[in-house]
Image (tube, rainbow, N blue to C red; front, side, top):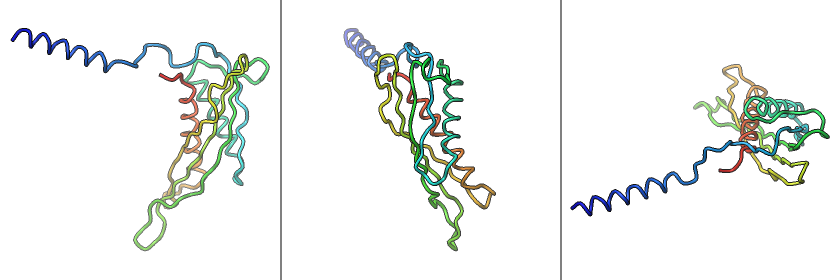
Length: 166
């Protein structure tokens, strides 16, 4: 009976240790990077101006949520972050019984490249992240309102890409 309890205890300990595999106490961000130069995001959409908002949102989030500093001179930067964005059209998600639209959804796809200028290594190679938001004209919201939210969602995901893999 005592041997069974001892074996069960060892099995329980082994299973719990396996569950903790992969976790780390180390820093989420790279140690070899301290400065980032963010290029203006490009867009091929006919709706201009949102690439400025995306670039600004990415810069603000990098400064606020990472140890990296944004620099305005490419020559002094450790890394460069560049990319492009595609804006999706407002997609009808909800309509009333008589067919009038209630809610639309807007999406943004951002393709990002992050390159270490010292080594030439690509830290992020054309990864795509998506941001989306909904709006309702009955609540006084517009496409520009939702695209602002979608851009901020995409900027958050870009900054999350900059974390080290577990």
